[in-house]
Image 1 (cartoon, rainbow, N blue to C red):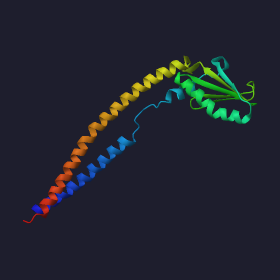
Image 2 (cartoon, helix red, strand yellow):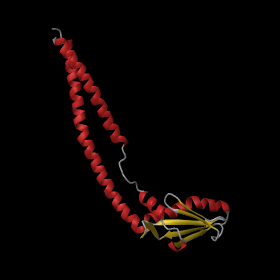
Image 3 (tube, rainbow, N blue to C red):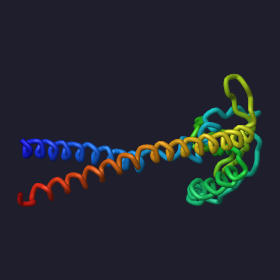
Image 4 (tube, rainbow, N blue to C red):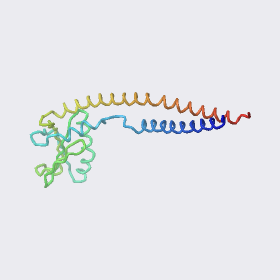
Length: 197
């Protein structure tokens, strides 16, 4: 009778160890894989660009560059545009880039606006400051929106990360303690079982 109860206890301990080890792994994997932020650093620019007003009266000419040949122009589209875009982002502003093309096109890219216009001189890249964006029929300066959204997103990210840590701290210690305790009880049970009577 004593032997049967002992076997049931060992089987129960094995079951508990398996369950707690799975819970332990689940909590650790969730901690590693769960996003640490709600908003990333690009979010204010992505939102502002998506809501930016692209009419000509909302674009202020900031600068332009003239290139001598098509190869230099294409290289400028890659490197020079990136530099100017980063300068605008440092000032919390949205840039619109305008180049020559026969068919007019306005394309909202990730964090800037790309415009093809037949009135732009060939082999020129023109940089425009985008003044306002429209949100729910309300006009807001892009710079104001980006700065405000950055402040709010930082606050939301900090609150989220604090809750994330609290959740982990609440779950991790009890599960790991119960897991270790059941392992020790299991080892103790096997040690007692091997002792001669």
